[in-house]
Image 1 (cartoon, rainbow, N blue to C red):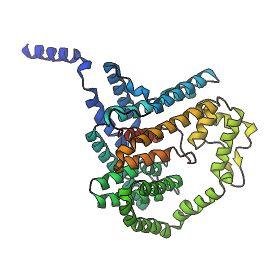
Image 2 (cartoon, rainbow, N blue to C red):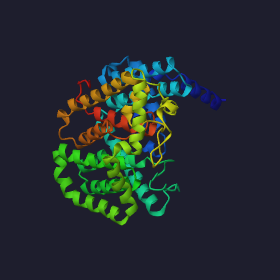
Image 3 (cartoon, rainbow, N blue to C red):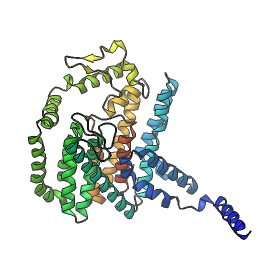
Image 4 (cartoon, rainbow, N blue to C red):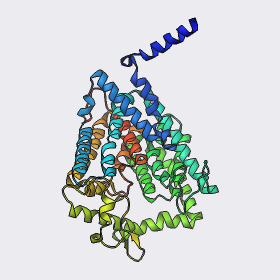
Length: 417
């Protein structure tokens, strides 16, 4: 009888728990910290959603909405509202409406990281180690897949491309977007050898992945890091011969890899208009020309692109596909799907985010992780890069992770624009 009464009393206390007394940040922090690791198992959506919901609950409970004053966030909110209403009211489709409605959680997630979770130095330290583990896993898994034909879970590589644990190529981009802060973090913590090893295997993995744009961005990130981070310049010059030797050796002993990463890159850069990307870009520009103000609606590019007036579906002697699922460039995607209005709002978001980073730079002049994150963010906004769809969570989650992490370094009491 006493035992039953005790169990009843425990259940009563459980259901009478006042959620207002919960430490929501303590719950959200470990969830947010595993953000990089979640990419390995494609669990980035649950992590982003849970972090966002807990942040909103905290803001509502504390009546603290100061984070909404950030310029970059206001631009994103305006873009979200506009894109949703445009898609809802003009030629709506179920997929388009759902896509336009759901992506705003990434912006809230970045705000949560920047203003709530990562201003804490210990949280940033733990996130750094999670990122190091993630980059190490992806890199070693790529090396394994290249060497034996399958990755750690038995997934086979594709012709000319590596996939790691993903269903399709994309691992090269993931490493290229995120490896530099991990390497910079190790070096700043007095682990130069570990930083060199991680940097070498990460660059080797990107090269072997067959992802040309990821390789270009990774090399650009290193060059920019050497220019911006004076503290690391000497170390980079010392490491440069080892990096060059590893990459050159891989290219020398694999003519197929050399053709993919060097010869075809030269061809595309030299004749962009005649390349597969030139064909896709032209289709997006043609659509934008015909729908200049408001575009064709979110997730409606592919359907409109298939119309006969834009030409045959296969173009040129190589029969490149004129239409893909998206225009392979973030700026062209916003221009084609949301017109000049959406394009201007996305450009405003990118500009205001970078402006906030620039304002935080003087207070973090000697912080190598901040410099590496800022470079990664700037390269994600580079308008001439080929990209995946803005709405793909495997691509969006790293972007907003880097955005929130970078802005968390701003001095206390300062705004972020």
